[in-house]
Length: 210
Image (tube, rainbow, N blue to C red; front, side, top):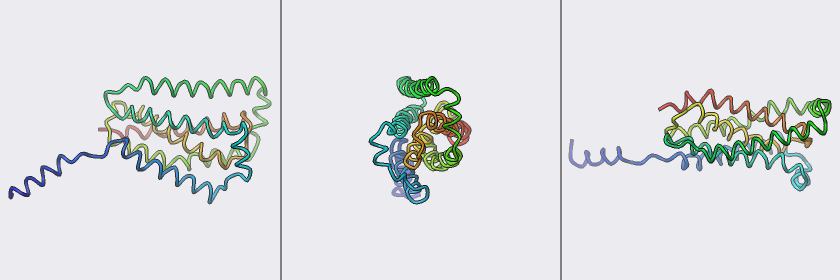
């Protein structure tokens, strides 16, 4: 081997790989944009979207969006083997507790009959079919990005990836969803996010082993 070839080979071996953050910065916006385009083109945004976003119904978009940001912070932390992500877990758990409190308050006001009435709509099936579809590409983007790190617990890291993808997909879907009742979107959206957390938990050990 010539000296020049040896130097080139050594240089190639020491080339730094993109970090998890760099990968996520490239892939996640694209994945969310694809989901947004799909909602606009296929699902259609609700005709009164501007009015809804200027009303208390904004919470059903803002809540999953904020949760997605917290899950992003958590996923970045869990991609490093030395990080226990205590602060990130604390923020995520506080947000989840807030969602649970809101649902309990809704149940106290409306009762189980109010819950059954709110969920007795064809939009419930649309919700359960749509959010996992809209969350699938974001989940793939997060798992691929986290694969560049070295998570010490792939299953837990996968759960964080599922939480991020599910929350992002839910926020996007909410732009279409015409149901503004707390007793509809809190349990329906929550269950779909849990479905994506479960998917991430199952896929994490396969995609994130090192």
